[in-house]
Image: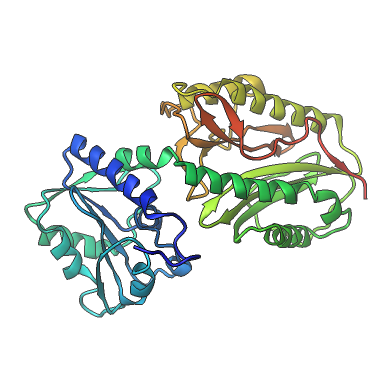
Length: 384
């Protein structure tokens, strides 16, 4: 199929390879079909990318059979875009519907399968009405729904060459904007304007969108890293942290940078150096076969603080801002070649303040590779 330029992000061979790998894993797991209701999996297997998922009004369904190509069961409003993908079996209905919002179509698509895999585990959500899912199970009394989360996450954790290239591009764009900090930010600038200026710069540098931008600022550190920006102006001695999840063709970067304004306390400088050291220690150790829990412990040992209120020190990255695996003590996932992960140490700097640092890296056969351009070894100070 000739795909329309600018709508589908990869060649058909990319999706064919994803399908073949999924079906091989399904045979091993004795799963007859995968049933998806979520945006990331729909896009991963079909190339169907749209912001229309922001509306919760309509459900969207995808079936991956053990043999053959994907089956899309979607509202009619998405038919034209789906027809530009490599999917041929597209079943639609007029949605929203008062009585049958696609339920009979999805039942018809699944009725011949005995064991149906779904995402049921950590980091998954059912994006269809719970009442409809209950009715669907009653309509398919001879089918068994099983958890396919480990199977799907294992597939998506290892990235293709095309995926890695997109992530590297958006990491490069964000790195350039972070390097413009001295020209973008200044003492007295309200935090709201800091966020706005940084978003504009990301877009000017080539990002498609900036769906995620968080951060904080405060004397010697910041209280949290997820609050919306306030109108409070940057002051002498403040530490500013910005953490961006900008996107390119639906793929994310996710890393942050810290800046001091006017001057920095010795405590802040020292904390920054520890965070850089912890990141470097994790980077130097990151090899295929190492467990995520081991990488977590390496960071924890470098920071040498008992408590970790953030919970983890990094995660997977790709089509979603955060993906499996997690760098945390209970995640024993083995690192594998072509995984893209974040390294994200954090630490307390006293009086309810924290500092966080983050880089994006690619696991390779041998030493890993930075996808984000590494931060300076010493805390940057913006004088103006």
